[in-house]
Length: 185
Image (cartoon, rainbow, N blue to C red; front, side):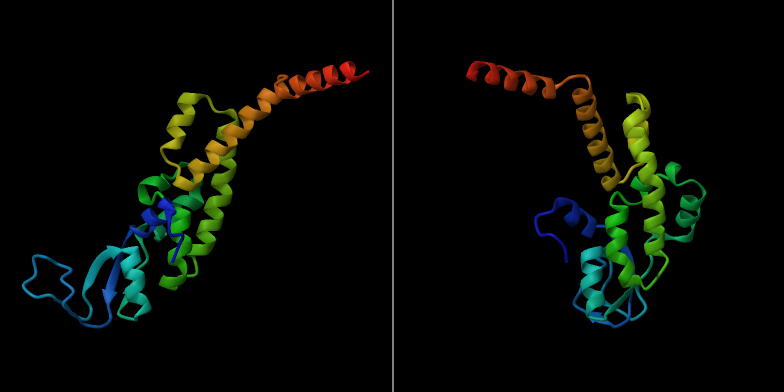
Protein backbone atom coordinates (compact mmCIF):
# COMPACT_ATOMS: atom_id res chain seq x y z
CA UNK A 1 0.00 0.00 0.00
CA UNK A 2 2.12 2.82 1.23
CA UNK A 3 5.14 3.78 3.22
CA UNK A 4 5.16 1.79 6.45
CA UNK A 5 6.48 4.44 8.83
CA UNK A 6 5.05 7.52 7.12
CA UNK A 7 2.50 9.04 9.53
CA UNK A 8 0.87 11.08 6.77
CA UNK A 9 0.35 7.90 4.76
CA UNK A 10 -1.14 6.12 7.76
CA UNK A 11 -3.53 9.01 8.45
CA UNK A 12 -4.49 9.16 4.75
CA UNK A 13 -5.39 5.47 4.85
CA UNK A 14 -7.79 6.23 7.72
CA UNK A 15 -9.96 8.50 5.52
CA UNK A 16 -13.51 7.18 5.51
CA UNK A 17 -15.00 6.03 2.19
CA UNK A 18 -18.47 4.87 1.30
CA UNK A 19 -18.67 1.35 -0.10
CA UNK A 20 -21.36 -1.00 -1.38
CA UNK A 21 -21.06 -4.72 -0.72
CA UNK A 22 -21.09 -6.75 -3.94
CA UNK A 23 -21.01 -10.06 -2.06
CA UNK A 24 -22.63 -11.14 1.19
CA UNK A 25 -20.23 -11.31 4.13
CA UNK A 26 -20.79 -13.40 7.25
CA UNK A 27 -19.10 -12.85 10.60
CA UNK A 28 -17.90 -9.34 9.91
CA UNK A 29 -19.78 -7.46 12.64
CA UNK A 30 -19.61 -4.03 11.02
CA UNK A 31 -22.75 -2.67 12.70
CA UNK A 32 -22.75 -3.31 16.48
CA UNK A 33 -26.48 -2.51 16.72
CA UNK A 34 -27.33 -5.24 14.21
CA UNK A 35 -28.69 -8.56 15.46
CA UNK A 36 -26.58 -10.52 12.96
CA UNK A 37 -22.89 -10.48 12.12
CA UNK A 38 -23.52 -10.53 8.39
CA UNK A 39 -23.74 -7.94 5.66
CA UNK A 40 -26.03 -8.45 2.68
CA UNK A 41 -25.37 -7.66 -0.97
CA UNK A 42 -26.13 -4.00 -1.71
CA UNK A 43 -25.48 -2.81 1.84
CA UNK A 44 -23.90 0.65 2.01
CA UNK A 45 -21.28 1.13 4.69
CA UNK A 46 -18.57 3.67 5.50
CA UNK A 47 -15.16 2.17 6.21
CA UNK A 48 -11.58 3.40 6.49
CA UNK A 49 -9.84 3.50 3.13
CA UNK A 50 -7.31 0.79 4.02
CA UNK A 51 -10.09 -1.72 4.75
CA UNK A 52 -12.25 -0.69 1.80
CA UNK A 53 -9.21 -1.07 -0.47
CA UNK A 54 -8.51 -4.60 0.78
CA UNK A 55 -12.16 -5.59 0.34
CA UNK A 56 -12.20 -4.14 -3.16
CA UNK A 57 -9.08 -6.12 -4.08
CA UNK A 58 -11.05 -9.22 -3.07
CA UNK A 59 -13.95 -7.98 -5.26
CA UNK A 60 -16.28 -7.97 -2.26
CA UNK A 61 -17.17 -4.27 -2.46
CA UNK A 62 -17.23 -1.30 -4.81
CA UNK A 63 -16.15 2.15 -3.66
CA UNK A 64 -18.15 5.31 -4.18
CA UNK A 65 -16.46 8.60 -5.01
CA UNK A 66 -15.64 10.40 -1.76
CA UNK A 67 -17.46 13.69 -1.28
CA UNK A 68 -14.17 15.62 -1.38
CA UNK A 69 -13.93 14.74 -5.11
CA UNK A 70 -17.59 15.23 -6.05
CA UNK A 71 -19.02 17.60 -8.66
CA UNK A 72 -19.59 20.40 -6.12
CA UNK A 73 -15.93 20.42 -5.11
CA UNK A 74 -14.88 20.27 -8.76
CA UNK A 75 -16.99 23.32 -9.61
CA UNK A 76 -15.72 25.28 -6.60
CA UNK A 77 -12.10 24.57 -7.54
CA UNK A 78 -12.75 25.64 -11.13
CA UNK A 79 -14.40 28.88 -9.96
CA UNK A 80 -11.73 29.98 -7.46
CA UNK A 81 -9.40 27.29 -6.23
CA UNK A 82 -7.49 29.55 -3.84
CA UNK A 83 -10.57 30.07 -1.66
CA UNK A 84 -11.68 26.44 -1.38
CA UNK A 85 -11.12 24.96 2.06
CA UNK A 86 -9.68 21.61 1.02
CA UNK A 87 -8.35 20.88 4.52
CA UNK A 88 -11.85 20.55 5.97
CA UNK A 89 -12.85 18.19 3.14
CA UNK A 90 -9.73 16.05 3.29
CA UNK A 91 -6.48 17.11 4.97
CA UNK A 92 -4.53 14.89 2.55
CA UNK A 93 -6.54 15.81 -0.55
CA UNK A 94 -3.81 15.17 -3.14
CA UNK A 95 -2.35 12.03 -1.60
CA UNK A 96 -5.79 10.52 -1.00
CA UNK A 97 -6.88 11.47 -4.51
CA UNK A 98 -3.89 9.66 -6.00
CA UNK A 99 -4.74 6.56 -3.99
CA UNK A 100 -8.46 6.50 -4.69
CA UNK A 101 -8.55 7.58 -8.36
CA UNK A 102 -7.64 4.19 -9.83
CA UNK A 103 -10.04 2.39 -7.50
CA UNK A 104 -13.27 4.28 -8.15
CA UNK A 105 -12.94 4.25 -11.93
CA UNK A 106 -13.57 7.96 -12.37
CA UNK A 107 -11.19 9.62 -14.80
CA UNK A 108 -11.93 13.15 -13.60
CA UNK A 109 -10.09 12.87 -10.26
CA UNK A 110 -6.61 13.01 -11.82
CA UNK A 111 -7.29 16.18 -13.84
CA UNK A 112 -9.01 17.71 -10.78
CA UNK A 113 -5.93 17.07 -8.64
CA UNK A 114 -3.64 18.52 -11.29
CA UNK A 115 -5.66 21.68 -11.91
CA UNK A 116 -6.19 22.27 -8.18
CA UNK A 117 -2.50 21.81 -7.45
CA UNK A 118 -1.35 24.05 -10.29
CA UNK A 119 -3.60 26.95 -9.37
CA UNK A 120 -3.19 26.62 -5.61
CA UNK A 121 0.60 26.14 -5.86
CA UNK A 122 1.00 29.63 -7.31
CA UNK A 123 -1.14 31.07 -4.52
CA UNK A 124 0.77 29.17 -1.82
CA UNK A 125 4.13 30.46 -3.05
CA UNK A 126 2.86 34.00 -3.47
CA UNK A 127 1.48 34.05 0.08
CA UNK A 128 4.64 32.46 1.49
CA UNK A 129 6.83 35.10 -0.10
CA UNK A 130 4.70 38.18 0.46
CA UNK A 131 1.98 37.77 3.10
CA UNK A 132 2.18 39.30 6.54
CA UNK A 133 1.77 36.89 9.45
CA UNK A 134 -1.97 37.49 10.25
CA UNK A 135 -2.95 37.10 6.60
CA UNK A 136 -0.75 34.04 6.25
CA UNK A 137 -2.18 32.31 9.32
CA UNK A 138 -5.71 32.73 7.96
CA UNK A 139 -4.59 31.32 4.62
CA UNK A 140 -2.95 28.32 6.32
CA UNK A 141 -6.29 27.16 7.72
CA UNK A 142 -7.58 26.15 4.27
CA UNK A 143 -4.42 24.44 3.01
CA UNK A 144 -4.02 20.69 2.82
CA UNK A 145 -1.11 18.99 4.57
CA UNK A 146 0.91 18.90 1.33
CA UNK A 147 0.25 22.58 0.66
CA UNK A 148 1.22 23.50 4.23
CA UNK A 149 4.51 21.67 3.76
CA UNK A 150 5.10 23.62 0.53
CA UNK A 151 4.23 26.90 2.25
CA UNK A 152 6.65 26.24 5.10
CA UNK A 153 9.43 25.21 2.69
CA UNK A 154 8.86 28.36 0.61
CA UNK A 155 8.95 30.58 3.70
CA UNK A 156 12.10 28.90 4.93
CA UNK A 157 13.85 29.33 1.58
CA UNK A 158 12.73 32.96 1.38
CA UNK A 159 14.06 33.63 4.88
CA UNK A 160 17.39 32.00 3.98
CA UNK A 161 17.55 34.03 0.77
CA UNK A 162 16.87 37.30 2.62
CA UNK A 163 19.53 36.45 5.20
CA UNK A 164 22.00 35.72 2.42
CA UNK A 165 21.06 38.88 0.53
CA UNK A 166 21.49 41.05 3.60
CA UNK A 167 25.06 39.87 4.02
CA UNK A 168 24.67 36.73 6.01
CA UNK A 169 27.10 33.83 6.00
CA UNK A 170 28.64 34.53 2.58
CA UNK A 171 30.55 37.59 3.86
CA UNK A 172 31.64 35.83 7.01
CA UNK A 173 33.09 32.95 5.00
CA UNK A 174 34.77 35.35 2.60
CA UNK A 175 36.42 37.26 5.43
CA UNK A 176 37.63 34.03 7.02
CA UNK A 177 39.10 32.95 3.70
CA UNK A 178 40.73 36.38 3.29
CA UNK A 179 42.44 36.09 6.69
CA UNK A 180 43.80 32.66 5.90
CA UNK A 181 45.32 33.91 2.67
CA UNK A 182 46.98 36.84 4.42
CA UNK A 183 48.47 34.65 7.09
CA UNK A 184 49.99 32.25 4.54
CA UNK A 185 51.65 35.08 2.55
